[in-house]
Image (cartoon, rainbow over all chains, first blue to last red; front, side, top):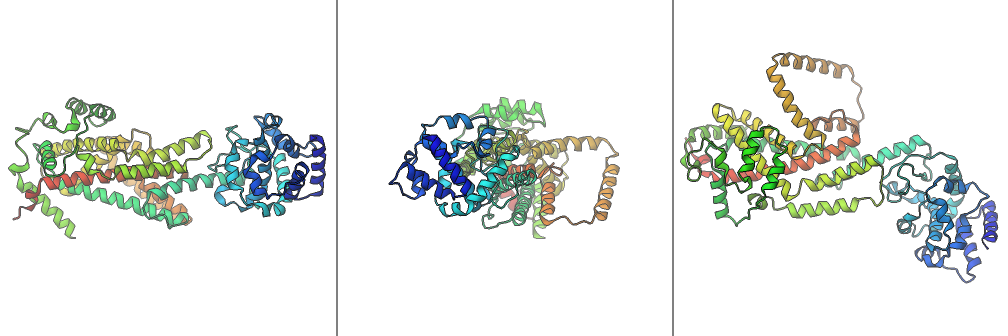
Length: 338
Length: 209
């Protein structure tokens, strides 16, 4: 039965029937009463019996098998496991893929060929591409032939349809109307990488949702980075002003904070401090002190501070050097006033 | 303890960003480089937002600042701007240390301090810096070819992110992503700290003439 269908299909190829027509004829052969639209056809893989469908594409007369043959990993074994219905759907979907590519937007266009694993994704994409098949079928066949003659391109993509079996070489089906030479494809890969990263940045930078285009987004990103850096400068100036005395007792401050505001829970995790300080590059001796003091409680901070006389009681309440702070504050206010 | 309240938006934003990155995660594998890049991107959105990172950073920052204060009390006549610069550099270093060396900008920040220290010892540093600047200015004047707008902006972004001037475009964008996330965390931490300190010391700031 396979051979007969094969012959029938060969004939169909030679006459350049549309893919849709061929499939319909084919299915009618199987199921005289079958006349449902192919959209439902795809979603219901049980309709197709793999054994028959294998013949649809397993044409040896064409160059097509070269394509399948190129993916040594699983093209042939899959084809041979005919009873699986999934294979059938996969085959059909591959045919559809050629024709629907022209409608895909830039991000979805790159298609792989040989891998059945993508059926699930393929199903989602080819819901209603029936009309294009008629138009694109002839061109798609030619494209397939072109691809079959080309050598493999190494290709990595963030498209959801790229095969995984061979990590190095993935066949790329060029979009309809796009160049198929390796330079353009490499260029497209590069552009995809960049746009993918820009998408991440878009999520990070607030207010970038409405902006399309790299230049505008880059502007926003640059502005945002500059504003963040300026904020840090300002905050560091603020911290410099609030610069307390050496016997400044953080513990007391935090205690006050705790008392005044809602109670906060201490997270005792000295091991965190250990791991954090393992990367301390400024002063390893200092970090040892920190580690030993169970730092996150902010309690033993005074241990480190050798100059503090009585950490628990003393704090900036003493107002020991208000003059220094005053001058600092006045400087700050002066600079802010500008 | 303090930090958990001072960074209240962590969980929400962390959840958001993690779901976003999960949604964007491709369903297929890629070449090794792409996997690495994607990991960096997804991680950077999440890793600078976790509570733990914030706490580590805040505690390290406090300690580093105290050290700076101790050092500056030896020379009490510092101008605010100088002190501010010191604090900012300290904060940046602590931030870079928190990055644990996986990103280029963090390594550049840490390395720059070493370079600055070396330069301090070498008196000839000033001369070389001056020469470099003049040479650079001359070069840019002569090469008046205007790059396309996008390229110009990319170059500018490379100058903003420390240590990323001659980095490829996709890597630059990766670094920028991580840098922005880290800067956001730094701003939050410093804001919280400043607020804490100013709230705890209200009287001294109000003492007038």
